[in-house]
Structures are given as structure tokens and as C-alpha cells.
Image 1 (tube, one colour):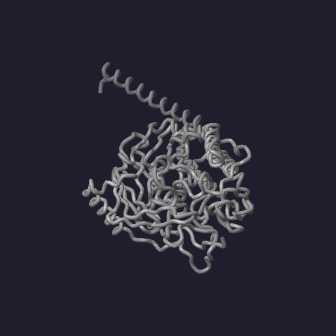
Image 2 (tube, rainbow, N blue to C red; image 1 turned 90 degrees about the vertical axis):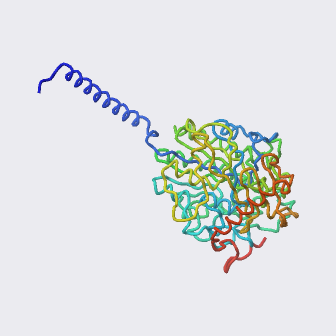
Image 3 (tube, rainbow, N blue to C red; image 1 turned 120 degrees about the horizontal axis):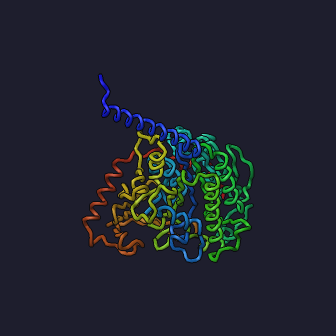
Length: 484
């Protein structure tokens, strides 16, 4: 076959294309070698405050608490204004966060005892799958630093038995294992000696009682150490603060610093902690390959006056199902990846698990009922959130349901005194329009009877589809009631 000038020219053009393609591949290889982060799965840093209210950060409207690092995180990421927890107390809320399931599905809720105590013998069921377990399966280093509160009597219940390579923290709330009968006055004037709380590393107790004035500082130091030691592999860091749960303790560097008093000191130290973590990520060149999530496990505890936080304009507090009980601050930040801004769509801690799985390529459980939604369309493109409804439980009972802007209360809970609550049943139920009335002050059930009917049916359908798991929190043989 004769080679004409036109075919020769075509041959040269194709040869040039091949050479250019090879050069681009070589450059890409060099670029990846120079920047190992380009080839890595993203790191995940999940920071959870304990009992921090919706209105406790200055970016969420607090006038006397200074939180520059939380504010910066919000300005550089997404600040959510309709973000919920699955329960308004510690154990069920944390179980929901780590498993992506309502606590009624895995027994991590009870009508007899709201949370695990220091004497509790059970914990998160072994057949539950946590975020950490899914991430370990795809090569992540994992650490839980801070408060756990999902079981501790058997090592299988500790973080190290639930997907975490490393654990440093306290196994339950900082007000447990009391050494004497506590009064409101003693709670408001705390001493470390009042609580025989252990500090654990791995599965061993390394200090008892834990010096709680140093809690936030030491948890932060361990978090930074974990980041530095695992910078070359993808990691999941769950930094779970024990503050601002009462009793309140701040380090010497922060005592008396805030205009808001001791509570403000504690929040400002948590803000400092966030700043230290962000600096560590930046110093190690990890900032652009790390998703940082900051939120709280429930609303503020208001039984101790100024020692409790603020829910902003929302009604209610910890232990209830009003908005202030279960709507919490939530910020997502991934430099250069997320669409910045304020997100007013609905979401929940239940949605963290599926979102992390989508981002990292980890497996999301498909052999059980899950309650979370993937938030990546909203995080990356600001598309509408898939969550349109929320269910509000106290223990194993459904108290309220929300769909869109309407929330229907079948029961409500209120504070009856120091560490005492009362329940009220509402027949007919109470209806609030959260768009017009986020503070839940004006019952509009008479104005919107069709919405009452719709939400009542939604609740009935939800309950009929639930298969409650055996109560894991209620006392059993060998589980003595805590002395105080």
C-alpha cells in the first residue's frame, strides 16, 4: 500500500498525540509522588462536644462567649441550622451517631434508666457496626479520644472492641462514680475528688480519679499526637469531649477568661482545642484532604443554672424533645471541597455514617434497617438534603415527629426540679410551625388539622415498621444501682 502525504501527516499527528499523552501521564505520576495526599483517601475528624447548646458559640449567636475557631470553621465550611441528634441524652445519642441507627433498633435506650452508669454491665451490642469498623475495613487508622459512654465493664464494649485502634479517655460521663451524695451546691462548686472517674488508655486504667481540670487539654494533646503519628495513612479521629457536661472544669489557662463565667471558660477551651487540631492538620499538610465535623451530643443541661448552656431561641434543654433539646450546632469543613455557606435543610447525626461512607468508599451496612441519609449532595453541591422527617424519642417512646416545617408533639417532658422530670401527654397533640415559630410557643393544631392527621399517620407508620431491640441499658443481675 502506498503511503501518501495525507496518510503520512495523519501518522505524525497520531504519534504526537501519543507522545503528549505519555508526557501527561508522566507529569501526573510526578505530581502524585510529590503530593502523596493526592493519592490518599480523605481523613475524617469528628469532634463532639457534650451538652453544648445550639446557642453556645458566637457564630450561633452567643453574645458573651468568644469562639473564634468555631466561627472560622463555620465561615470556611457549612453551618447547618436544622441539625438534630437522635436522643437528648448521652448514651442513645452517641450510639445513633456511631451506628447510623435510631437507638430503639439496637437497644441503646431505656425507659428505666436513660444512660449507662458506672455500674452498668452491658454495652453496644456486638452485632452493631460502627463508623470506625467500616473505615478500618478500607485501611483507616482509627482513634477515640475523650468520652465513650457506650459500655465499659467488658473489653468488647470499649472503643477498642468497636473498631477503634486507639482509645484514650473516660468510659462514661464525668459526673459518675460519685464519692459522696451530691447536692446542687456541690455540683456548682466541683472538685475532682467528688468523682472517682477513671482515665483509660486502650483497655487499662492509667489514672483514677481523672484530674478533670486538664480534660480538654489532655484530650487535645492526644488528638494531635494521633494526627502526627498517622499523617501518612488515612485516619478517623473521633474527638469526644467530656465538657461542657457538668461538673464543669477548665484548665488554669482558661479559668476566669470568659465573661460568661465558668461555663464560658469551658466552651472557650473547647474552641481553643479545635484551633489546635486545625493547626496540626495544616502543619502536616493534611488540611485539604480532611473533612472536619463539629457538633454536640444533645442540648444544654439547664438544671444547674449558669453551669448549663444556651439553646438560643429554642425551647427546652437536655432530656426533653423540644427543639432546644435535640437541635444542635453542626459545622462541616473540607477546604476546597465543600460549598461554603449556611444550610437550612434538615439533617441529623444519623446521617454522618452514610455520608462518611460515601466520601471514603467504606461499606455502608445493607443487612439491617438504617436511619441515615447521604449528605454529600448538599455538602458538595448545596443540593437539597434528603432528610425530610425527624423522630423524637424519650427512652423507647416516640414523643414527637417532624416533617418539613411542622412538628407534632404527642408527649412533652419538662424539668420538675433538680435532676427530676415530668411527662405530659397531649390529646389532641400539639402542632408547631417551626418556620414561623422555631421557639415552639404557638400551638397551631386547630389551624392545620390536615397536618395533624398527616404527621400522626407518619408516626404510626414509623412505629409499625420498628422492631425494638432488647433494652440494653435497664439494670440487670450484677448491675447494681450506683451508690450516689
